[in-house]
Length: 571
Ligand SMILES: Cc1cc2nc3c(=O)[nH]c(=O)nc-3n(C[C@H](O)[C@H](O)[C@H](O)COP(=O)(O)OP(=O)(O)OC[C@H]3O[C@@H](n4cnc5c(N)ncnc54)[C@H](O)[C@@H]3O)c2cc1C
Ligand SMILES: Cc1ncc(C[n+]2csc(CCOP(=O)(O)OP(=O)(O)O)c2C)c(N)n1
Ligand SMILES: [Mg+2]
Image 1 (cartoon, helix red, strand yellow):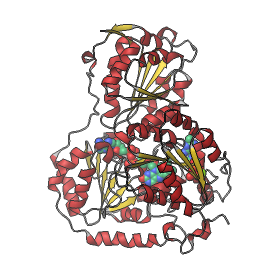
Image 2: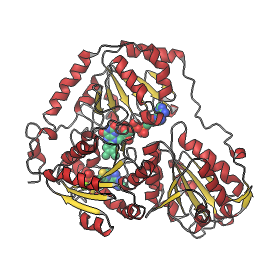
Image 3: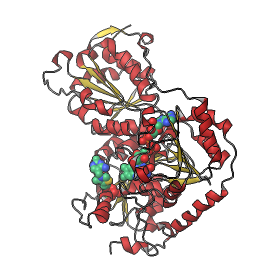
Image 4: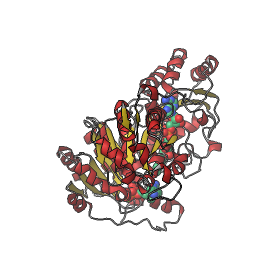
């Protein structure tokens, strides 16, 4: 059948299973928007194209499906760059479609012409400039394959206006991808599997490092089977949280810069690390020269370029985590590692006395309490928490105990402030039956709060907990520790968030004392629509523990004990 390039685009998206796109129109993408009306696709009109990319990303992370964002050329396309980079750094599968000026105008500095394939080359897994209607279908089909396969990531398709307007024969079958998109990796050898099994079976102090790849692979059950069979404790990266149940007796918690002290100490004492779908980020390892000095290392990873990138490993098993673990499993012996687990438990006990949760209510509202109460109030149902970036993000990782995969969505690698509200909207679109909470700082909220209008216009009932400390808190914390408390440009004012929410037509309230936290959350839950809670928390509170950037993983700054709160309280 003969169709315009614009119609071919939607024909392909529908056949790819796409039901939702997030976008913002403009001249160069207008033919595609016009054609969209004839297809069974729900379009969410965003307020800024960065929001569209974070929504697509949140949609992808909540569901495992590819998220789709669409924008016009020039400023529409450049507004997408931060969201594309965010998805790239966290291996999230999104496809971004941009309009481009007519093919004959390319290179003339035409109105709203920008070389978006050039700009996004380093932050996409792949990108396309499509100048003919004939090339639309092959590009879309290959883009979805590339975005979702192997190590997932963002793909951009830039389509000129004339390619959208002109017509050609549409043949779905003929547009099937022809080239392989797999990285060239050595085949997994039986010898490597045997070496890995021998290391695991001989280890006395092993730790599994569970990363984002656990969820991308769908290897949650396989990791659990390995841990339970061999009695190995499991630590998570920030993006690995939820891949192994927090309530499991073998769960340790988060590793790294703001990881739990006992987790980092266990890694430093371990004789074997089994890294599963994680990339040894510098926030995870601290000083590489002193990282896990006694441990042999096994790295199970789909992207060969991650092997030996930061941490030299003894055995590399390149492949999909679930597949590799399935092949490894028969060679794993049952283990009794009670002595090792007891050592870790002793360190955990030492941390508990410093834990802010153990302290009596002194009348102050601490972010950690808010997060922990949010967990207690929402734990029994299907809940997704989407965080922004900063102190609140770390407290969420520490005090919200995730038992299920894809229940925490957060920007880890790029650390993009402004992520939470739009990504929460995308997550809610993907999983409408889940309760979706955005946990966001007062700084990050002010970066993308325009998307409140999106939630209202489209009736997307996200719940927003603003952790309002009047500071760019995480940066203030660095100034507190490393810049002699010289708070350059970190005290932050904002609007009255309750009035702001109400101006958008959103049910909003403020909370200033701990006693009101649970009732405010319950009220937001009961409300059939979006809700905002402005938690006015302690202003100069600090995330502990903290491994200073580049320091040894065991050299953590710990919460002062035994009188921790006085140290951080504003008065
Ligand atoms: C303020 C702030 C503080 C932070 N502090 C910490 C901290 O204390 N601790 C911490 O852990 N992080 C922290 N982070 C996050 C950190 O920067 C990294 O984003 C995070 O550690 C990366 O986790 P990851 O390696 O599991 O996930 P990713 O970066 O997403 O990497 C996933 C890995 O899995 C691989 N993979 C994908 N699919 C598969 C598959 N099917 N099979 C096998 N492998 C696969 C990928 O190739 C990739 O190597 C912080 C971030 C911010 C913004
Ligand atoms: C877009 C962007 N700009 C700057 C930063 C640097 N940064 C990291 S955390 C942070 C402070 C965040 O403040 P807020 O949103 O209020 O959260 P809090 O740390 O107070 O919980 C800043 C400025 C960033 N991560 N992203
Ligand atoms: Mg703040």
